[in-house]
Image 1 (cartoon, rainbow, N blue to C red):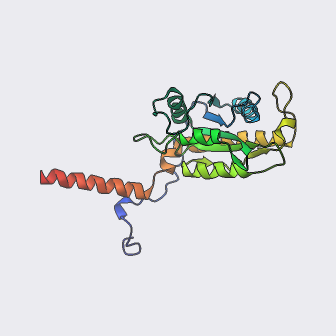
Image 2: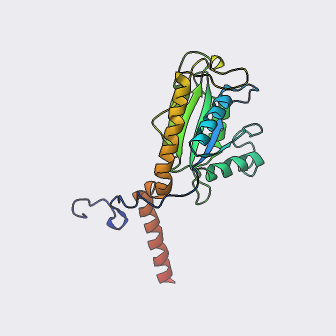
Image 3: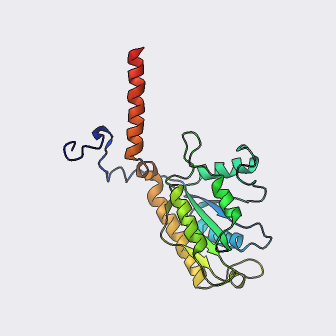
Length: 237
């Protein structure tokens, strides 16, 4: 191997193992955190999130919905602010997430982005989102668009999440819900069913192998170098 691959650290390379991708399955329901991106009294992203929550519970998941009311703008308050602490604790608790944003000016809302920005890539040795599954949804006031879900996919990748292939985009959302907030039967609703079913499947498939799936050669090499440096320092002493 060293002759063919002279640029790698042989001690840090691992051959992918099928056995390690099939660990013993957890017995508890999949844990799904749900975020929505509007503070309006009649928020269609919240109504869509509530509809998705009903489906997730039907599929056997345990859910939590974060209420963004009172969440400060990023960097305007310390990280121990109660709403920030609540959001981060829910993110750590979760094994999968659903992000649902209105599209505003061709993009996700600032409220949606602020929630994601308050969840850092790492808190000490803990990475609150790495290896977790993610489903993305959006609502629009006009014709169907995919700008918000596309942006959230980019953020999901940046947060090292496993974003499922399916997604939901509900056009003219004001026409798709009854006065009491329930989603009407439609192809849009059927797509939401598809997305939540797929999210639960992907979460069940990956959650117990998450640490192995996100174990990287570059990070093992960095940790190995740090260990060697500590051992040399001990020898000098």
